[in-house]
Length: 308
Picture 1: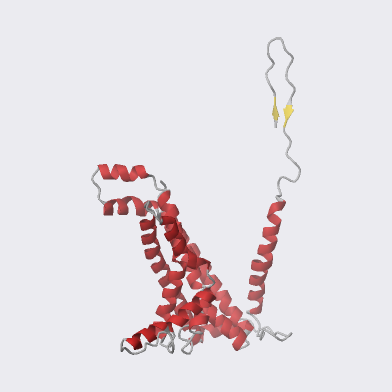
Picture 2: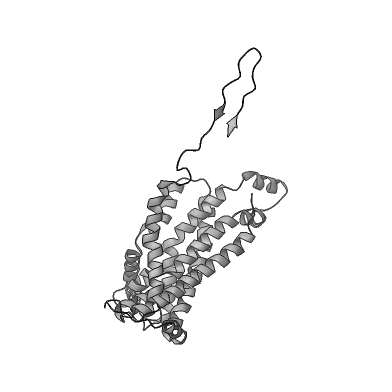
């Protein structure tokens, strides 16, 4: 690109200025470490997992024989996999709904100025920083049948112990509650960021027009929180569908296979049953489910987006 300056009266014309594109400007080498790490820890394991899913590898021996689509066909008739798949949707959807309701409520309450607001936000977000293994162990001490805090309290007041973790229905409900309470801080932070981005002039204009608190919330807050809602829902749903640690620590997937998610069933199939090929097929199916749900949900939520 050249810039020719107009000559001034009584002066010589200014020199021509040329801008040159620096060499190598099209390739930013700062991206290379991130791309390399992504390829090593994400792309390669994905490709390797897909390849293993078409074999009968046991996860330990050197040899592996190709079995075609046998592992995927086996999934269609596997009762334990169907149970784990249903539980996966319960964990994902149940946790997501709870986290949105509680997270939005906390964000609305903590968006107002009051003494100790920062401390309250920190306390609510702290469980997110705790390892799921540690969190699951803590709650296991609360819900376990023998020596659990809740059953000890029940016994102290003359009640009967409750099989919180040995009953399939109660175990699933407890896992959903524990996962929701641990990560509700993520939703709270996302909604707080969305609330602070809403112009206050909208609320003032609505108040002048006579709109009440509920009308302002429904007509202003909810539509303008759509981007935050989409982000929170997708992140929480992905986390719930991949749930593994809490299940492994609290119930081990029991009784039987009743509380397994697909992720925890993959671990049991791989290490306990020594069926790496079959476990990889489960992982590929779970990956495809998460990808499809994420794309569909993201497109559906973005169509309802309202820009402020």
